[in-house]
Structures are given as C-alpha cells and as structure tokens.
Amino acid sequence: MKKCCTITFLLLFLFAAQHAYSAEQLHHHHHEHADMADTDVEQEAMEFIDHPLVQGRLSGPAADQRMQSFIKDWKERSEARRSTVPVFAEYLEDLGTKRLVTWFQNREASCHGVLHDMGKVVNDLTKDLALSISICADSCTYACTHGALKRHYADRGEEGGATAIQEARDELVKLCQGELLIAGFYKGNCAHAAGHAFGIIGKNIEAARDLCKAYPPEMSYYCETGVFMQLMHPLSKKFKKQGGNTHAEKLAIRFDYCKANATYLSACLRFMLTPFRKANDFAQLGQSCEPLSGKSRNGCFNALGYLARVHISKHPAKINQICARGDTEDKKMCLSGFAFAKKGHTNVEKIDQACRSLADQSLVNFCLSQHAHHYYQIGNQVLAGML
Image (tube, rainbow, N blue to C red; front, top):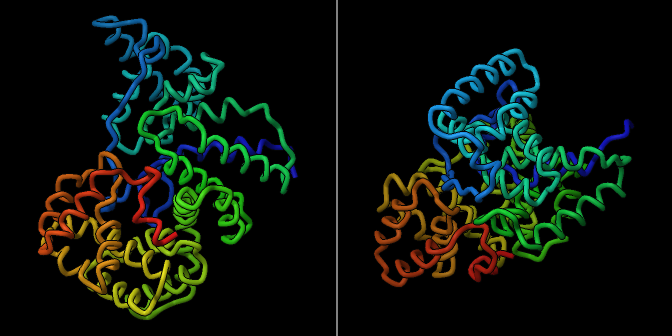
C-alpha cells in the first residue's frame, strides 16, 4: 500500500454537503455534485466572520475590474482541467472570500467541487485550521472547508490500516464533541459528517456503524445517517441486482435491508427509501412499521414522516392521513420526522402550515414544538424513543 494520509482523506468529508443526493446519481465531471431536483433540502443563510480575507482589500470599481480578471483566469484553468489554486492565490486577498463565494453560488447552487482549491489557499494564507474553517464557513456546502482540511493535513503521512482508522475516529469524535467553529453547525451535523468518513473507511456496513458507536447515542444516530447517505449509491446497485418485479417489491427489499443492517432504523430508511416518496409508498411503509415494536417501530414511523415531508409540504392536509397510523406515540414519531427539520429548510413555512392543519390540537402543539428546533441539534427528547 502506498504511503498516504488516511486522516486527510477522512477529514475531507468532515463538513459534508447537506443536500440529500439521489441514490441513482453520480458525481458530475470535475468533481461537482449534482443536486436532486425534488428532495428534502436546506437553504442555509451565509454567515461570514469579520476578517481581511473575507472582506478583501479592494472595493468599488477596482474590485469589479479585478473580479472580471479573476473570472476569466478561473474559467480558463477550470475548462482546461488544471488546478485553480494559482488563480485563488493570486486574487483571494484582493477580492475576499465573501465576494468570490457569492459569485460562485449565484452561478451554480451545486458549486461544491469548485471551492476546494479556495480552501487550500485560505489555509496556506492563515496557517491556522480553526481560523481557516471560520473564514470558509458553509461556502458551497462546506467545500472551502474541505479544501482547508485537506491542505492542513497534507503532510500527516500515515500507513493505512486499523491504527490509522482508530486515530482518525478518535480525532473526529473529539472534534465533534468540542467547541465547533462555524455558527449553526451543530454537534449532530458534525457527527453526520463524520459518518460520511466512516462510510468510506469501513470495510463494510458493520464496521462503519461500529465507528459511529464512539459517540453518545444521539450523535451516534446522526453519525449513522452519514454512513447510509454516503453509501446510497453502491447500495442502490446492490438492490438492483436483487431484483424485485414491482415497485412495492423493490421498496420491500430496501426496507428489509434496513431492518437487518441498521442500528437506528430511521437512519437507514431516510436514505435507502429516497426513491420511494409517493402516496402508495407512504401507505406501504406505514403498514410495514405496524408489526414492529420498541425503538425499531419508533424509528420506522419517524422515517415515514421524514420521507413524506416534500409531499405533505405540497398537500398540507395530507398530514392527517400519513401520520394517522397507530397510537399517539406512533403519530408523534411521524410528526417529529416531518417537522424536526434542518435550519433554514426551504419548506419551513409549509411545514408550519401543515402542522397547523392537524385535526388534533394537542398534535398541532407537538408538531410546532418539534418545528421550533433544528435537526442536528442535540437534546431532542422525542428522538430518545428510537435510540
């Protein structure tokens, strides 16, 4: 095995993009990510710290002229498939990350891949990982942060194997439970991102799940969501090989897989059932949840609410049908899956409207209370029922 920086590779995924990618999609050429057109996504507000590298040295017409030169030079190197690090190195201090990020995100929402090189330059200039992460913030779904981490750990050569994996796990666990460097980037979010890394280095699902167990239960759950999100595409290929003649049979294959392979059923179903978000799918999943008991049952109903979020957001009154199965606890788990959404979710107002469409006022209050908090925040007592 070649000498490589295993921890570097892991940390590239620490601040993983928060879009839910389709199980059937591949990465675009030049390592940009494709967004799923109709899915459960968040829309974070950009937040920048007050720092010279954020603001840039130029303003007014001078900055505008310099920006045009940057665009020209960046496009030339990008189209030639050459590293754009030299371009960012030449222009970053003049233009600042805020101006550059705004241009890239306005140009293309899924700008993840293009900002890796900017993160490398940010770290070259600061020589400080914490400061680099603060400057990068959530730019292009944390792409700048990916680049900063890669550059920072580039010299930490490690032989592969169990020792390197253990060291990486310990570092990620410590980092996610410490003081986070980006406002609004919750501990659960960090654990989810670590799950992406564990999904890569684990030899199999069991190994990746075991790495997540180093976290406390709620963070372990979020970590496992990262594992299954990371492995959606290869697992989708596996499911196709198993066949299934009908849509319902294909759903059942994925459901059975999650029952057999997930510590937290919701963590798996949320991603393995991404292609199954129609009315009949919700009915089938609800029926599959009913024979279960305990934490598995709670996790199943939680996933049902989550998977139905886009559909309910378009048809608010449907919440009374989709989250109507079982007893009060079942309904609350479904409503929590629906309403406990990421900060700045695109359907935030529609989720609120759907909660208020519930016929039972006590469930209205519960739904709104879940919606008042943000997914990835630690301390949701409702989730304890499925952990």
